[in-house]
Amino acid sequence: MIHYSVVPMDVIFEGAETYEPKFLDIDQGGVKMQIEPISGFQARIVRLYSCNPQDYLKEQYAPGTIISYSPVVETSLT
Image 1 (cartoon, rainbow, N blue to C red):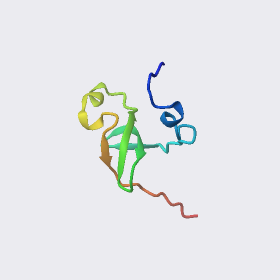
Image 2 (tube, one colour):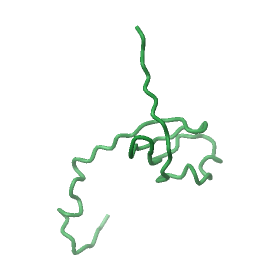
Image 3 (cartoon, rainbow, N blue to C red):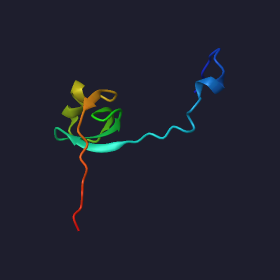
């Protein structure tokens, strides 16, 4: 890929080497997807894992869409 810009490359790619996304796999409304948490109860859809082609046509499941979710903490009693 070629990128032409008057902005120095150091400024454009600043922080790219240290960026470590924290993705989660969830099931939202029967659709399995990968999300990136933004805040406590919001996340951005990264990709869908669904095998149903109709799920990809729904706007609410489009990659980049901000959804609300509640994280579930699993505890084990031993």
